[in-house]
Image 1: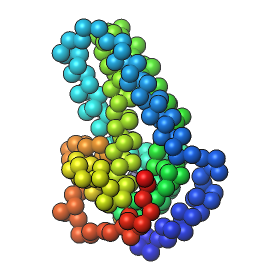
Image 2: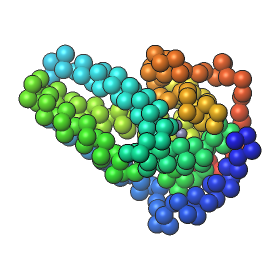
Image 3: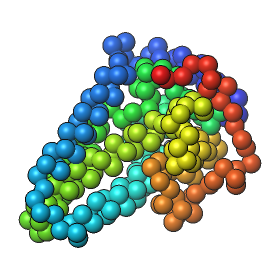
Image 4: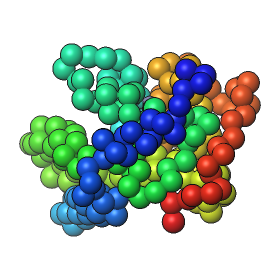
Length: 236
Ligand SMILES: [Zn+2]
Ligand SMILES: [Zn+2]
């Protein structure tokens, strides 16, 4: 994979994989609109929340971290018959479009290779919340059910935000913020083709990677890749 032609792949994907009518701004607006509306809807239903109920948000953040780790490692990087589309979109498109050397998303149209399709966002949040909401509402409290809705939509949006920031050009002001810079370095290492199936699966914060022994940090990496496109054609 050392001489993989990223630019050639990008050109082919832009021609054949990204629909002609695709609009990156519309993709961002629809995803943010859906997840933002669910967060606002969930929070607006709360009444006299107890401290322990607020703790559910921390639990959602921990479970979200674990879910991202396992889904990323075991579905997006292992070919499974029941999840061919997920493997294809991630391992065979996202990781070919972006490598540790060519990590920068150079246009809004290229967000097609970064963000989840809207139907995937709706499907995942539906699978979590349809059973979760009813179980919590029935056996814990109404507040817990609405906090699950707000928390899961909030965590999914934080995934999309941190992942998108990880594909910005090196000198983008958002990467001056140390947690974003750390996760960008973390994710860049994951994009190396010789370690994408084995290391750095977390996106928002690297807890599960640390616990599972799959965490590699920049200081432990032998390479210090530079992105030659990073200063020439940034996302605005
Ligand atoms: Zn990525
Ligand atoms: Zn990956």
